[in-house]
Amino acid sequence: MKPEILIIDDEEVVLMLIKRLVVKTGLHNTPQLFTNGMEAITFIHEYNTKNQPFLVFLDINMPAFDGWEFLDMLNNTPLENQVNVIIITSSVNQSDKAKSKEFSEVIGYIEKPVTEEMMKEVRKIETIAPYFQ
Image (cartoon, rainbow, N blue to C red; front, side, top):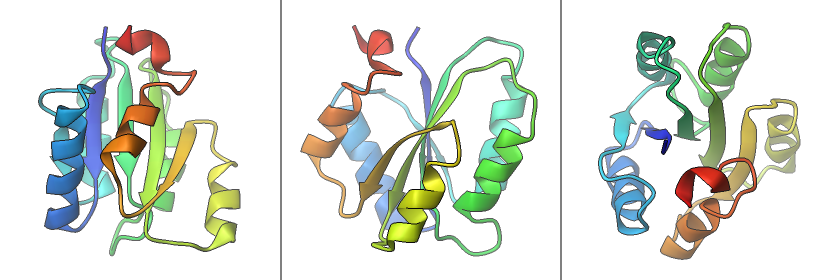
């Protein structure tokens, strides 16, 4: 079963770009788009009993409820679903990359701008590769 894909970013243009790349590379035909992490957490909770795996593309720098808060809440919530997160950020701060490794859900870190080639590489990540075969 392919994972449900969630894209979380506060910028509409970025949401549309990542959605286009997700569809174009065959990761998913209809990814879910969210402008903040709280909406995405609610969505994940609604599917908590359906054993649906999730792949989340997450911006860490957002107002109000940022990516780190999303990861903290995800980490502290019992879920039956497998949730993997790929951070997509404009941050070039190495401390952000190091901090991302503190979360077991984070399986990738991509610096913007996102390209088609980067999305093709996502399919090869060991943790989620079996879903796309």
